[in-house]
Length: 425
Ligand code: HAM
Image (tube, rainbow, N blue to C red; front, side, top):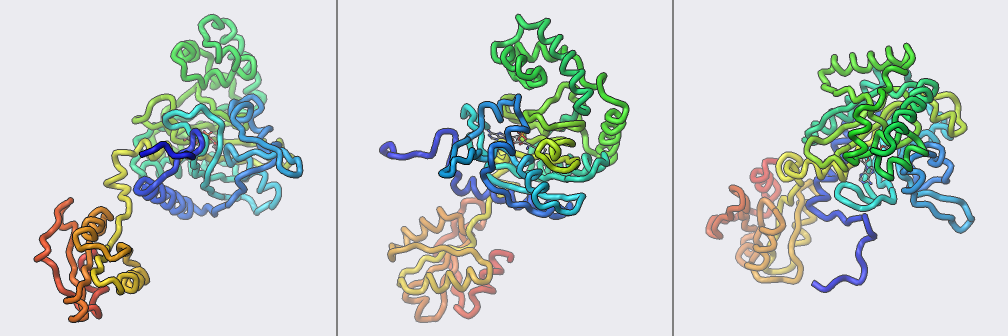
């Protein structure tokens, strides 16, 4: 095939069926899980004024380097959303829903990253935010929802959890961490040296082996936590234990955005490469509302990347998260009733397709097989005369097609009920 004149923008891919089917199944599963737990959907704008995001990560790569920003025709400084927590908080401050407020979202997000496996410039997130509850049970509920979703989706994950404390204890910790990292400067990569100047916490995020060697010995946050934060964290852990959710304490886990306080967690795939093994993550962000000019309001939530989750469950996609295949394919040899029958079957929930342009039986049956349909209906002169259609079961057993002689002649008036018998619907 000749190179097309246009292709999708760098770092962004088209998603075609059947992969899009598995993606849709994941999104449906997530909305179901969120609904079961009392979360209502929030539909947010794809872009916001720059201020909504700039405050949530002044020292982070996401805000410093990865934002898609531009000036609109009225000279407003606009950003394509790199994440949704700040937008949810902006919406809370604007609309003041009753607290506690539980919402979920899904949609495309944008980060100007170096494209590579599991890292795209446009990616899809699902997430929940729970505002107005300081109770550690809220943290546990949020963590459990993401954990349950990923498990149901078939991803093999580890749950990593840490407490980042409040702003005061973190300041002390950052100072101590900074001193430690300065004393190991010669062992750090150039990018870690640059990060260190901006925010020592971010160095803990480096996936470069030499940096990881240094950070694995770095001081831990735990020693700097206040009694209240230590107790809060312990209660979160207790609640997870009671729910039978296994977790790993990760004393140096930090997150890629600046707004986190207290609980921070990540769902890590055991099947993906370390560079992109975080399927999702989140935590508490008490103080974010105030930093956006809102009232005092605590919050906890997570976001999960759907593109990465799909990579992590690649093997399972064809079986357990079965992509919905077509029910019926009509091979119309006469050429005037396929659309009518298709509309009739579709109206009762039987997915139906057919071919255009009156092709030969062989060509149409080939298309029927390719379509993944369970049964084919053949309409020829003979069938028309008898006011019937011939039904061929295409997938009696995996990939095996029955002989044409095994067709069953079915009366048009009994078509729906007969097809349902074959489809078990
Ligand atoms: P985050 O860790 O930046 O958190 O992103 C969450 C997930 O989005 C990641 O674990 C990953 O699966 C996916 N993701 C991020 N960047 C990319 C990319 N370039 N390509 C593919 N997937 C990506 C947040 O966004 C926070 N807002 C989560 C949160 C909600 N915290 C509290 N509430």
